[in-house]
Image 1 (cartoon, rainbow, N blue to C red):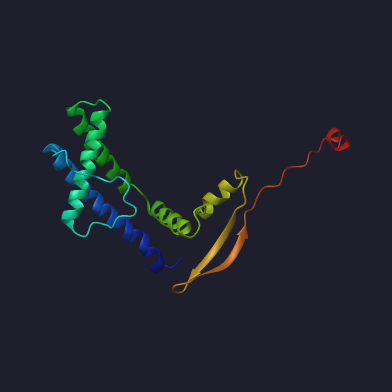
Image 2 (image 1 turned 90 degrees about the vertical axis):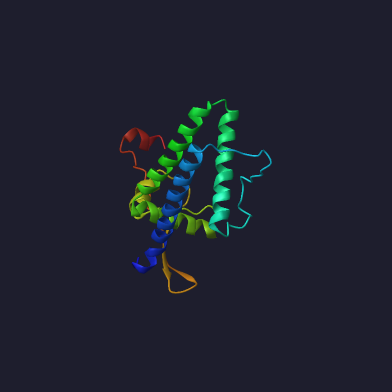
Length: 179
């Protein structure tokens, strides 16, 4: 794959890491200052149909509401106040460290899976090495696809059937005569 076409996943990952670092810092500052709530705030956990925050202030408001939701969830679970702050700080720090630890191959695979699933929710991207190892364990049908993007439409250049090892024929005379 050309280097220019591989840039999108890494640009998205860089943006994600920047935002996650900001969120982690915000969570730490907010948790240390105690998350106070008026009790009249509303927060929607599922935001897939809502517009993205239009400004940094809207983003910070959303992050604050998310933190309040997490604090309240842990309170309802019976966790002590001092443990809540420690738990959430560790959660955000761990999430950031795990995101930073992703390799270029991990980032590319995440991107390709999202891309493939945008066309077919059952589609999966398997890197060549992983596909060979996985194909011997799969019972379902699988194919390899070589794609070419020369603009808006993506062209399928080749389909490659999965290579499955053949079942070994038994060489014992007993099994041959009983068939």
